[in-house]
Image (cartoon, rainbow, N blue to C red; front, side, top):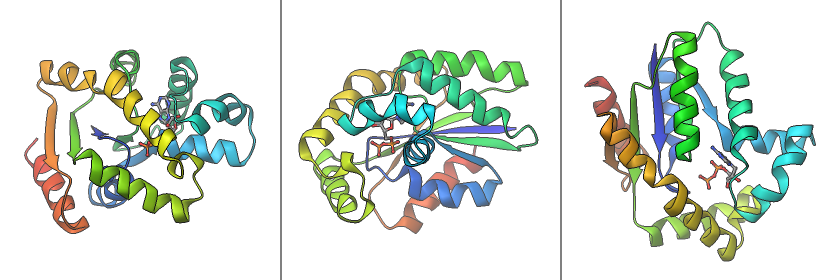
Length: 190
Ligand SMILES: Nc1ncnc2c1ncn2[C@@H]1O[C@H](COP(=O)(O)OP(=O)(O)O)[C@@H](O)[C@H]1O
């Protein structure tokens, strides 16, 4: 089983690349952002809990997110591996994942970060906001909150995975194909 954590700031291209990687390596793609948005749209209990946080660009509380993630993993007992996109986003979540995966006889294989400068990413998000309908992509103030959340809570994960020798970074600027190639060359060498 291989488990890849796709890592990067909002707008770095995790979702776009996940579409290619899941096919190539036969992985189950779990995007916490997509799962939350699905629940928001369908107004589920989970959606109700997550809405205020998401609409403001803040992180949804850890217990809610982790319970949901574990639930999703358990829905795919036959999976050849997972592509985690948007999880973990805090040290608590990284530790929760490191506790949970061994219970299904597995572990994080590698974390791969897509790197790009903030100005490029903010421009990408505002462009995406024109068509995605995502309230958190249409407002510079909310985008700023998401970067603040990233810098304070998610960036420390780089050190966490480096200590485990599981951190890899690729340049996230280029064509979609170029970036897919960079990611596959990391995965093929694991
Ligand atoms: N692991 C997580 N922990 C807490 N909240 C999360 C997590 N993943 C997603 N969310 C919530 O969903 C929102 C959108 O997630 P996502 O689509 O991955 O965003 P982005 O494009 O900002 O990376 C986040 O701003 C946050 O409110």
